[in-house]
Every structure is written in C-alpha cells, then in structure tokens.
Image (tube, rainbow, N blue to C red):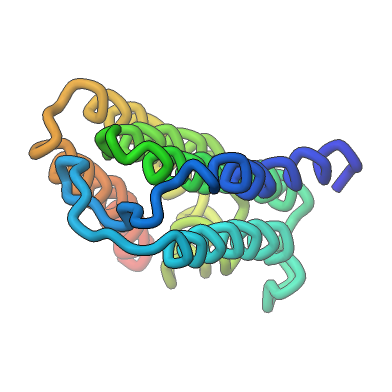
Length: 218
C-alpha cells in the first residue's frame, strides 16, 4: 500500500470522528438512535449511547478493511493471486467509504432532530455499493474468503469463473436497480423491493453454479 492510499484511507476513517467533534456541542442531550421504515425516530437515547454506536461503526469499518486486504495471508491453499489482492484493496476502500458515509449521515440526522431521517439515502448508497462489488466480482480469482464461495465453485476453477462472470453482471445491474428504486419508490415499498432484489442476486448465481456442477458430473 503506497503512502497516498494510506493517507486517503485514514482520512475516510477519520471523517466521521471529525464531523462528530464539530457538531457534538450542537446535539441535543436526547438524540434519536432508532428509526422506523418511514424515517421517523422511534427510540431516543443519550449522546453517550450514540457515541458508542458511532465508535462500533468506525471500529467495524477499520476491521473489515484490514480483513479484506490481509485475507491472502490466511488462504489455506495459498492460491491467492496478486491481481486478487489489488481488487480486494480497491473493494476495501469502497466499503470503507460506504460505512463512513452512513456514519456521517447518522451524525447529521442526530444533530438535526427536526430533519426526517431519509432511509432512501441508505438504500441508494447500498445500490451503489452493489454496483462496485459487482464490478470486482466479474474477474475475481478463486479464494476462500471473498466471492461466491460454494463447495463446487471452490473445487472447480471453470465453475468459479462462469459463476462470477454471471454474478458480476447481475450485481452491477441489480445495484443500479436498487439505487433507482431508492429514488422513485415510496418508503413503504422500497425496503421490500430492495430485499427481493438482494434475494435474486444471491439465489441466481447459486442455482446457476449448482447446475454447472451437476452438468459436469453427468
């Protein structure tokens, strides 16, 4: 990892912390910490409780990043290739940006209690994350920690390649569809639609991979 990448990733992690410090004194003593699907607060807590939630999100963000960029060190078959590592680093940065952005959005909503928490923003961000992940799934090499990790994909490189070519295209298109749904659908429909798309994005590559496996056996 070069110096510029290190600087960027640290700035991404630090952004929610700096933002929280900037608005901390403006926050009310009781802040919303849970919302319903319409974006209305249904549970309030102290600023200390909010601080704990934010700290966990930042730590998880950092932990996921280091897991993604170091999974090649614990690959049991030592088949992790350099091009995979490069993709995982880029994916780790994308995930860190996503989590930091959501954390900052939570801070913004908590420091402005009169503003309705817009859950659609999270749906749109999730859709964009799916497009990014789909872009990297397309060419990811076989490994035990990232991708469509099924018994038959892990044991057959051709199955892995074909499954991930399909999954990459589906996730990219599905992510765009989720983002569009976040823009145009009402609050009471968008969550169900998002979950349905995610189920399809998971089920279709799995079924396709299994059919390839059975076809090869026959």
